[in-house]
Length: 124
Length: 204
Ligand SMILES: Nc1nc2c(ncn2[C@@H]2O[C@H](COP(=O)(O)OP(=O)(O)OP(=O)(O)O)[C@@H](O)[C@H]2O)c(=O)[nH]1
Ligand SMILES: [Mg+2]
Image 1 (cartoon, rainbow over the protein chains, first blue to last red):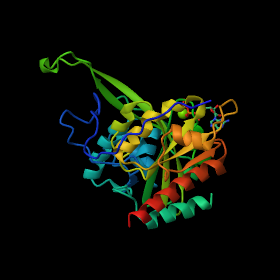
Image 2 (image 1 turned 45 degrees about the vertical axis):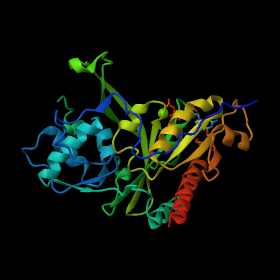
Image 3 (image 1 turned 90 degrees about the horizontal axis):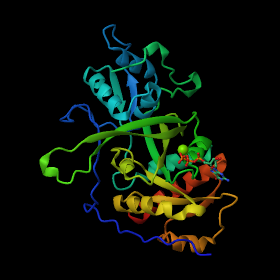
Image 4 (image 1 turned 180 degrees about the vertical axis):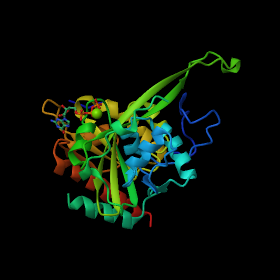
């Protein structure tokens, strides 16, 4: 029995296919008022919610008394990722939360980081 | 915005809180076709019960002629599960289980971009559903390993035949796994990390 056969595509940077007709909904039409937050940026509240804060900000600040990723905030609040980033952009501007940026792969991650991940996995 | 009262929102359980020392997060994406075991793999290694995050995408209507500016837009919500592993007091690994056959996953900014790498989960009963996602990862230069999920009724092709069928370059690891077992899923992640490590060595 022979399995079906794939044909490999070459990696050609800058020559990506048409990404299609799908777009992430941003906060507004110009899409400019969102901080570039990664799904795994860790968010920590800097203070208790001000009494004047709208309910969704209050909820977010309560959640982030300990560090929480943007993905987890989205899950617990039941809000789409892009809506959470709009909320966070406001909270970051008001200095009510801090964001701990994730380590992202540029070309390749740091060797020492990979070694730390392997060490951690080994203990599982 | 219709928003739940903040008092009714269930946050993380006490044991799911990250320590305040957590400063660095990394992510790995687990991609594969429907029912291949993505959620199972995320769940078997995650320290938290897998959660779901979602994103809203708009899909421009397929207009015959865009010049008229009369495209209709429909919103689509896509959701994916994820889990978490605290590796040290500072370092946290997130795993995202992503159905790979839809190209809109690749438009979710910040999903694949920052990922250390990907695991392509393959079911040998439906090998061809993985072809497209492998091509997309290659196009974007996201390093990946292939994990063959062993299902009891799956055809058992020899490893060499599978490598040929998937057109895997010799350096790309391919392993067999049982996503239901924590140790097996952990080993797949280790294989990915070792592979990434070897890439940093060869490009040094
Ligand atoms: N034998 C075997 N069964 C598995 C394995 N991994 C998952 N399964 C089973 O396959 C079924 C589907 O697994 P899921 O984890 O839900 O798959 P999924 O990729 O998340 O599916 P969708 O999200 O629906 O696309 C479940 O009944 C699992 O118990 C495996 O490694 N071996
Ligand atoms: Mg699933």
